[in-house]
Image (cartoon, rainbow, N blue to C red; front, side, top):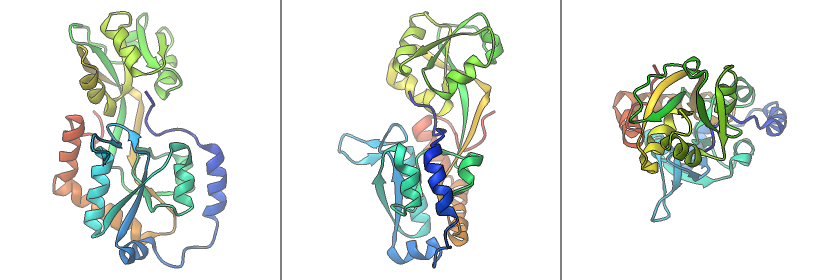
Length: 265
């Protein structure tokens, strides 16, 4: 299971920094989008439950629905452009699409080369436990001397190993460690809170969400090219209207069973 969109992409950022210093665009992106009547949206299309192709081969998922809502608030049609994650930032900088709606976490490094909307998702690290396990692990400290399952190479692998005394067991992905958790070969597992409801539902295993743990918080927003102040205001206004009319919260409830558009507590 891949962790949330927090990879470094250092090589791409080096190129992007050069692009950021180029001359400002002749027209604000909002004018361009309005004139075209289309908002071009970059996403992977292979990242359920955020964006993926359903049984009818149409794109669906939480990010797809959010992007459609934003486009509607802007008064334009959404046009999705599927792109591999490794090239998605470069594609945005090259103008292949206007925004990315693909669980892009806001980081200081990314903010050097991109502008971001206000966050529309707040993520956090969360434990997974067996339904029949009455132990209440409230933090990673409570797992000292216990076995914790995580995906190899994920941010949560590093987070788990930052606490001395935890027996961290790494797996190729979530299906493997969830099976071991159900079989009592590990005491708990660690993943992103956005994914846990989906993972438990699709695994058909007797598991339950555990506690939110410190150290894995992140904010997810919509990135776009710099020097587009009118577009920035319009995107923020669209998201704000979706919060106020309840549509953003309803989308979250549909896909995750809880409101992930507010900070985790």
